[in-house]
Amino acid sequence: MGCSDPLAAPPLATSGGTAAAETSGAGGGAAAGGLSTTGGAGVTAGAGTLSGGASPDGGSGGTTAAPGTDSSAWPPNPADPRTETVPAGTVQLGWAQLDIGKDANYDGGNTPSTCPDPDAMQTPGTVQFADGVWTLTGSGEGFIHGWDQGSLVYFKTKLSGDFTFTMKVDAFEMLNGKPLDGAAEALLNVREDLGYKQPTHSIIAGASPNKYIFMGRYSWTGENGKWWHWPAWPDTWPTQRDLKSWSRLIGRGDAISAETSTDGVSWQPVEDNDQNAQHPTWYPFRLSELGHARYVGLLCSARNDRNYAPLTQQPGKTTNCRDPGSAQLKAAARCVFSHVTLTQP
Image (cartoon, one colour):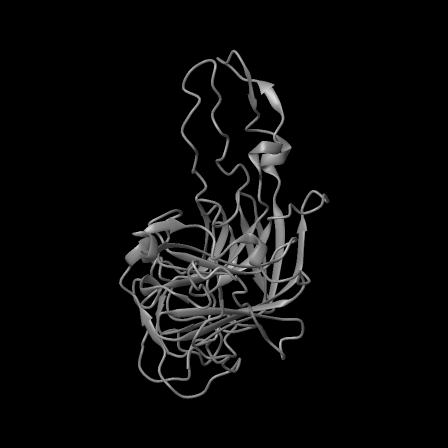
């Protein structure tokens, strides 16, 4: 069933208005200060641009300042090329990398005859920002598969107000040269906080090897707060989209919609085509938890499926178990993003 009030697609660039940024530190990774939120045309986080303020993690991190720039100015100078070094690599000033959910593991395997599920990330993610292009590597089980696990590069200042978050995938491949898993991900992410599972509300959008994805983790009041990890039903996902395509998430109030494009000019809404009237309308997502301050980021995950790990004899076990050190669980994907922009009207 269709949405009764679809959102109009905004332009890629905006002019006028005030960019609102929260610096309260909620969620474990928000900025600690250094941003002015008065005046300006918005936030731009694209090629060769600064994403705001002093390093929210309290250090310069290898930051270099371009001549004639002001690190506390808002909006940032579009010509400012500054970056900072984080443990995983190099990011634009104001951004960070996180192997989210890296230690997540299902319980189990507490007796000699039972096996644990080896879900913890074995290979740390990396990030490199240069010449306006983001290159991420990530392992992990993926995002919205019950929990989030992979490499996340996020804007450390939570954004308040309307926004448009855009990217193009230039490359997406496995580092070991093998085919991508059908659920591997090079996507956009909007999230309530930096928690990796419920009750953290989270939305992802972009092309995967199987189909275009517009998914969320959310609590639906229509089922007394039952948590969903899908936006609708898999047979209603949009048709195949080339991996090297454009995606954008558009936030207007408490509604977040997704659009896809092959050229960055003509955009196609990712709409609900579910015919079951008993199901909730999910385009656009209307989540009060994401209608206020929230994080935005790029994500990369190889979708390391533990079910493909070989069975081996593990110490202290009387039965064969999935090998946590197997190549299947150590594999990482490479995700290259260009034309990354974050604007506020």
